[in-house]
Image 1 (spheres, rainbow, N blue to C red):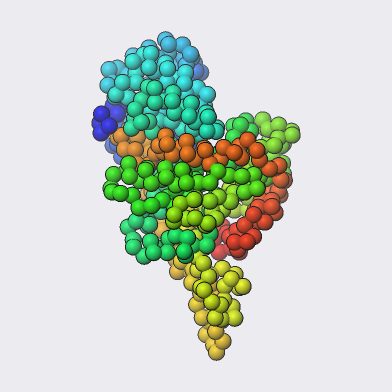
Image 2: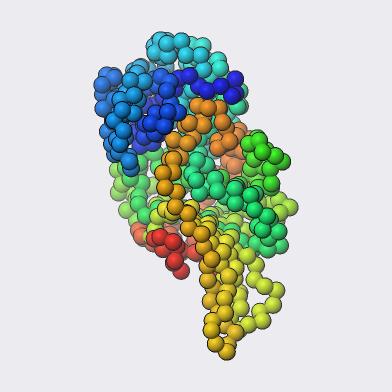
Length: 467
Ligand code: BG6
């Protein structure tokens, strides 16, 4: 059944934050484009009426960037939606879902619920006969370490074949991230230099200038490494580091990405810096003596033929100086310093820079001679700025793909487990958390981590014209 379109969507956790923030606007966009025409059954424990759920959906779409710009689409979404309230531990809840599905044969079940509830819900679906020909869509975090991710995979695999499990990492649904794969393999000029012979180091930054935004309780159980590095940043590393896929089928891309995670050297505490912004402990639902990191920087090695010895520096944090995601692939300096201002004594040499957000920029930096008698120059960027007007949100794209059975932008069991295996050692033994000022670039220890490789590139607000 892997090709057939799902004929209903069941959303567990429909009264929660994720539904309000991301899922309802995605459903609305799908209805608007005609891609969603099947019943939507919302499920949660609160005893809401259908009217309450509809009001919540409308409020969510209203607050999303485009607002309700097509009243007819909003009305159609309302009409497609029904609500089942009940306890996930009670099989009667699943009988009610079955009734609400009114004979649908190929439902997709979206688990927008904490991972601790996955097993209960999957078992309830199985008992009610709702897993046959069905798909399951699960949200990150997929586990909190290697052991729990294996357990979750086993639970999911006991009820669904791998090609019916859609594990969401919303970064994979972003246009700029899809473009990494395209840029690498739709062109031939990068391949000759895309390896340890030419690349000195790679750094990836996902910076946010805001704090935990009321998600203190969640954050206390996660921390920065689990929240964004092990998934979003690791996915970026896999796309940058993977070998060319053997063919067009997305399974080949998944194969190559999995190999990158398998080749990641397990992290050691000395390859990691943990930080916490001043004031985090005063956030609601955060422990007064919390040791949870809101900033994390890593030095990582992908021990593959292509990348042996090249350090990959990853960092992310809340309450940093800017919001944005950027990759810097630094190329080695020319073999001889023929000019007075040659690298490495005078800063960086060539690099490729991919700014992924808030807007997409791809830049190649080269040294260009200044006018005059002296052989001195400046590092200047040739850059392509790409706006994506009318770009689908990641959730719209991913939800639409999952319903259509297209797994290209989802993560696979072996890749998830290999990624956890790389971080598992530092989940158990880790360095102390270092305080850092808000609106800074994190603790100074993070600068020391990368000092030998030219330092972090701390960017400015728009095109990254920072230091
Ligand atoms: C989420 C994390 O997965 O990704 C958040 O839980 C983080 O803490 C967010 O802010 C970043 O996503 P985006 O799309 O806003 O860059």
